[in-house]
Length: 85
Image (cartoon, rainbow, N blue to C red):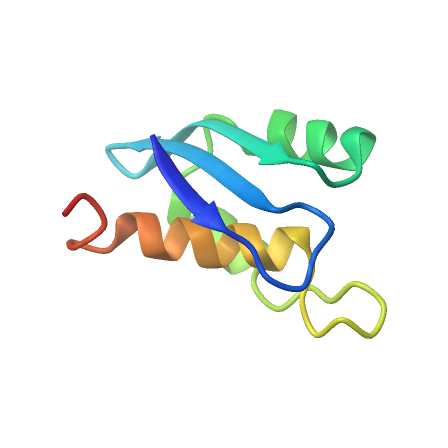
């Protein structure tokens, strides 16, 4: 399980399980429950690189980021060779 501390969003953490480049589970700690549940249902089973392409850069109001954007950052970091160190 990879844990990512978010910045600039209502969600405080994102917990990820990515195996073989495919998203197996996502859990947001806090955030909008309806939105995050919907996002999770769409993403489970998707290649992480595809999710990054779709989510990166999405903005929430004037925050400069969003839960989807933070998830893209978390996925990118989880795919890094040093993520498991």
